[in-house]
Length: 155
Image (tube, rainbow, N blue to C red; front, top):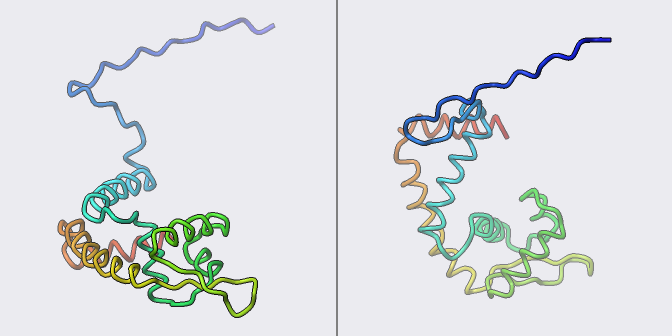
């Protein structure tokens, strides 16, 4: 029979003087750093582009660039499942920004911006340009290019 060992209790470290939590290994994790950056960028986006979420703005931009795109192709391009795409298209259609048209066969719908969708997207794109300039203002042009390249490598 193995003798029972007493469980060692770790002493709690002294609290940080500033009251903040210790981060442990989190600052060394790429995903953690990306998430913090994403949260900061999304906060700025929400403050300055209040009409649409980044994802919905991206959908409208893709439809503008690809008029008549099918819902399934758009879902693939956005890495969304088809049922999620249906719900998002429903919301944008209800807001009068997108319209579905019967596709080449009866099983598909093609997506088109409405006049209201084109008008809103023009405003959104101007705000996105300002947002991009603001969030990227801490980076020199070569740093921005390097960041984009590194993000592409991670993708």
